Length: 469
Image 1 (cartoon, rainbow, N blue to C red):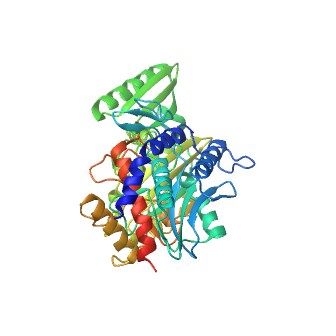
Image 2: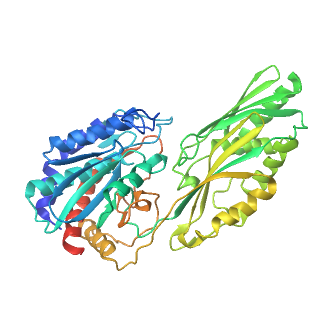
């Protein structure tokens, strides 16, 4: 641990907090590609902020990689320690106490989308490198590079492009997970599917449309369905059934009746799709209600399948796909669904233990294909697993122990840039016992923890230049 580094970070804390407040005010949600802004103008604006801040802090090497990624570098060695964070964020959602893009300070916390995931850690990493530069700490044959991406929440195409153009670091980390650190991550698979609604419903109500979900790595907190009843009396009965279902289950479903038309509004609780059990899926709530209505036809068959094989579960247990190993447990999340013009389209996100990676797709196909569900596309992510005695792992563990005095046993959670960038692992930024507010309302970072983040990142960067070969 370098005490002078810790002291310098404390001296720069006010500037670091101000920079975080400023970058949070940029709503860098994925947008329509534009010339010079492949992931939307707001993501590009966040990228520009990061580069301008690097220049303001006196870094001579500030590089824009095709408007997708930027990096800020210090040192002249031939080997690179890389810190990989992202500047894009998920949509704000609802239920905030303070403005989601306000960057306001309340209760000794900075509030706003991205404070934790992942603008806060990016800014803390940059100021940690700034402190190393100010102190002139010797790096030997190393340089340190802070890399900021803008497409982590939408597929990591930015970092795949970066690795292709700039290569992989020799060692490093991404501050986008949990402390102490992770030696592996669960594999992330997305399955994009369709189901033709060729046979008409035979019940007294039919589904005209259903829509929910936007960001694929979030538990949807809103969904809407439009139903059409055979007559107005049946429409009223359906609305009453919705109210009763909501009362019994505790799920927030409401109905609007306009003649024979019923519109169902479902409100859930958003959560990161890596922990779907922390949320309430608004789409699932509608599907489970509809499954009780015996609609018949193709939609009825799909609903029967969904109720029997998925239901409210998030662990794959009803499909016989529950798995666990040292890399964690399988989780299942319905990310998106749309019913329109006699076609049902849906996307699921399955996160699975490393040792199950070669079987999971075959097992999923065995569940859905006999029902007539077609898998149109798959996004199958790679993962990694470092031995626990690897210098990268032992170095990060030592830094964490020295600065916190706490146990450094590695974890395995995350879905980070470490799956796209070789030779790095997640290191922070959520401490044990701190609520995980990623992708949730009132995302915020406690200022003392934010300063400790910067100390951990700075000491980790420097220690890697001393311990890795």
